[in-house]
Length: 476
Ligand SMILES: Nc1ncnc2c1ncn2[C@@H]1O[C@H](COP(=O)(O)OP(=O)(O)OP(=O)(O)O)[C@@H](O)[C@H]1O
Ligand SMILES: [Mg+2]
Image (cartoon, rainbow, N blue to C red):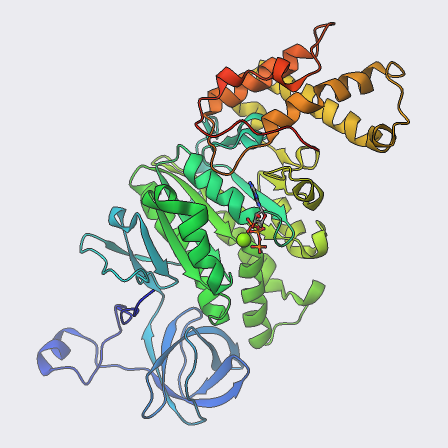
């Protein structure tokens, strides 16, 4: 990552500009002074500025720092720096520079890596064909959203077959740390048939960003993607903006008629950034220290995805569940806002079952509107087998279950390997959706036959996958 270019924002008129340009502008400038600094909150006196507007902190002899208005102390604006502050003292000058954050977006952003301000961080300049948009967009009107009725291929069999996702649907990926969220997002990026992919990396460790882009995403994944990065060391206001910036880029692609896939990793760190800002602005902490504004911003963010008359944004939001507690407040709030959730299970990862998607715990709420009745029934049968096996697993694993005691457990044991062949997938492997559905139907049909084959190979239509990668081994 090389030098980041200076921020190019449309600015409010500067009265010190030439007389010629002054003729066309308003002779007006909003200036104030730093009154106090508490943590990340800078209180300013002598001026007012609208919520969300951008100001410049101007310490003498040091570079100016961009800051956003996040609240008010009585009538005095409270600013949160969007860049690290190098030096600041009470009395330093502050100037309002823009009423909102804007960025340049368009087709030529594909394959590029940008920061939360839309500035390239991959060492190449942006091309001139980009258009400027405001990041604080409102969501599409609910009545202007066509129904979600077409499936979107992710290339991941466990999702396409068991948790089919629709074009314009919004899903959460819930997992503890290190269980496999980023790897799954990389698989989806490479395997999807969406026209464009926009990835927001919010609050990731710096080391992981390069690793994700080079290894997990790879050249193939990056070609049709735009990656927006705000690492954990960036100020909270910048981390928060990264999710909006990615959403704005996706919206522009959608307006141009594309089916876009938006991946936000993670919405929990977006919520944590707002927690820092909300508390700095004087909001009261509620559940686990999250102030009310967090629960207000989450729906505003996720509602911007979805389908419109022009195109679509299908979105996956990863949710970090602390201590694998799926009921923590952000997980709970996000689950209620989305059209489905995919739960990653640490136990499956420990067994080497990848991707570690816990099918019985996961749901795509729109699946039945997207697939045929035959597929819906096959999914139901396989879920029943999985639940039956899980509930009897302890008995089976210690050898206490005797074959023939319960025909449903016998069937669940017999179908265990073929189901695992469907669900397990090497991270380099991509399967077209029709092939995933074909495997699903074959497995579901096999268990209804009285002399059902019990070996994985017998029920696995290996010929149905046309992937170059090796067939995964059944495990678990
Ligand atoms: N599909 C997969 N195939 C093989 N290994 C995998 C797969 N998914 C995850 N892993 C293993 O799990 C590890 C962690 O995965 P990953 O980085 O995707 O998790 P994460 O949930 O994004 O972690 P973090 O919370 O730190 O961001 C990987 O280094 C890899 O060893
Ligand atoms: Mg990760």
